[in-house]
Amino acid sequence: MQIILFLLLILMLLIIFVSKKESLSKSMKISLVSSLLLVFFLGWLYTTYNQKVAKSNRELINAYEQGKTLTCGEYKVDAKGFIFVSGTLSFVAKKSNEKNRGVVVDISTCSR
Image 1 (cartoon, helix red, strand yellow):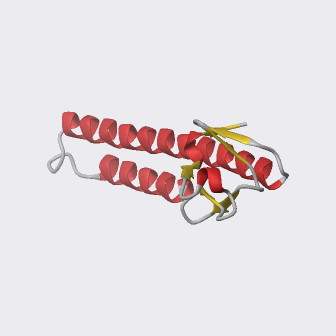
Image 2 (cartoon, helix red, strand yellow; image 1 turned 135 degrees about the vertical axis):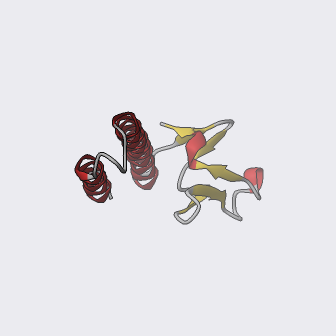
């Protein structure tokens, strides 16, 4: 995805610089380039943030699957009392877990 965004940025910059002087003034070209660079930078920040969150989630899931206990807010989540649901990235209490029956814990609230 990053490669596609980068190629689109290069294409847009080339179109702006190659266009005739009559169609786009110098100040308009500068503002378009600035806008494109800002959008590209914000996209890069968003991608970097998502990669950090995904890495953190993978580490938490690995710890859970290795039998370690996660601290998720007020709950202690482990494989004995909770099931991991990959579709929603959450932990759901097992039916055998009477103390926490019906509890759903989002992975974003968890730490090791």
